[in-house]
Amino acid sequence: MSTFRRGEWSNWAGNQRMRPVSFERPESESELSSLVERAHGRRQKVKAVGTGHSFTSTALTDGFLVDMSKLDQLVAVDREAMTVTVGAGITIADLNETLHGLGLALPNLGDIAYQTISGAISTSTHGTGARFNGLAAQVRALRLMTGDGSVVQLSPADGPLFRAAQVGVGALGIVTQYTLGVVPAFRLRANEGAEPLESLLESIEDNVDANDHFEFFWIPHTKWALTKRNERTSDPAPTLGPRARAHRWYSKTLMENYAFGAVCKVGNLRPSLIPRLATALPSTGHSTTVSESYQIFASKRIVRFLEMEYSIPREHCAEALRRLRAMIDDKGHLVSFPVEVRFTAGDDITLSTAHGRPSAYIAVHMHKGTPWPRIEAYFRDVATIMADYGGRPHWGKMHFLGRADLSRLYPKWDEFLAARDHFDPTRTFGNAYTANCFGP
Ligand SMILES: Cc1cc2nc3c(=O)[nH]c(=O)nc-3n(C[C@H](O)[C@H](O)[C@H](O)COP(=O)(O)OP(=O)(O)OC[C@H]3O[C@@H](n4cnc5c(N)ncnc54)[C@H](O)[C@@H]3O)c2cc1C
Image (cartoon, rainbow, N blue to C red):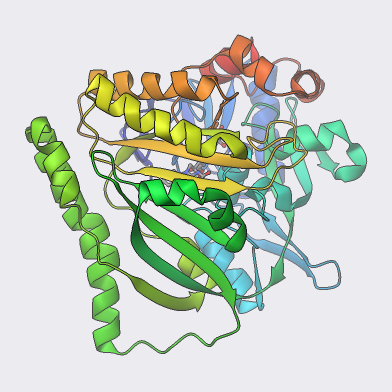
């Protein structure tokens, strides 16, 4: 979670800080509206913030910082249309529990659930699954507070304005409510194991197509990848006895978090040991679990890191990964964190990282305690490879691109800029990040 202490806000990763003029937690849309109107009148800036799980400066402001956590209610359930309407500040974890109580679920999720639904949707957050989309594709309607404090309701009938607001990167306004498409609650069978990277890459298309939700983590300096294949199942979830619960805690909390964190810390102290430590990275071997979908999709993340993620056309995934592997060896980067690889279907959302193409996502991480020059050198070398495939950086994860590069990556870029001029002509919601990405 982000922290706010003695007037200073810091994000989850601890690499972004700000001192806003005030920290606001509105309890209603009308309270938020008065605040935005006031800021607009005084030409001050306003920024909505979720739980600070972005690595970029996207949520920073020197004006009013608006924490949306009190606008988190379930507003309506429409079982015929299979939609729910919720306050935009609800966390994904709370939304999952609420939906489960109603016998409903989101069809796909990312790998944590700490974020707000608005923060996640606004940055094009996604999970994995070649037949599934990112979270923004579930938006059926939204209420957007514009730069002067007025509110508009948007739906697909609003065409380009709606598609721009689906992934707004916090630049168009503050979303106060979403109506989201949902599905009946379902269970997943999670199969986890370790496989040689090269054989995975040779059959990558089959792996992606044959599984509902396929992903893998390649461990740099080794030939191994940890795989996750999540399949929809009607099998019941077993009731876990004390031994099974202890085993789950051992593999998910102790090994994947604390033991892994300890390995990363040793690597920070003695970077030259990283390749040897990588071969001993904690893996609990093959495991199979059946549970409710939202419990399988999201995991605990205790070890803090910095991350950069690129979306590239799916067909280039194997080649890009082979180049990444060779680059790490050639340049001598010492990388203690796995490279995560996921897949989604394409969509038509203006700034979705999967706009117009089935996508592969390649995410690189470095432990938070690693000196910045080492992180930057690695991330920049990865970015250079991804650029050759028209790579689009995740809006909430670190990247080095500005407006000129980004505008070439999105075919409907001008529609987004037009929507920004329409909803926020005076840039009430502007900050350094929006200026860098979209212009002043
Ligand atoms: C440990 C970890 C795991 C992650 N896993 C994944 C993953 O599996 N898949 C993936 O794609 N990403 C992942 N991310 C990235 C994360 O999902 C995004 O960065 C997301 O934006 C974080 O949501 P948040 O609530 O923390 O929003 P913040 O980071 O606080 O804000 C993000 C942006 O949303 C805007 N915003 C927030 N609320 C509103 C609102 N109501 N109206 C308008 N704009 C708003 C903010 O102004 C800002 O521009 C991960 C990040 C971390 C740290």
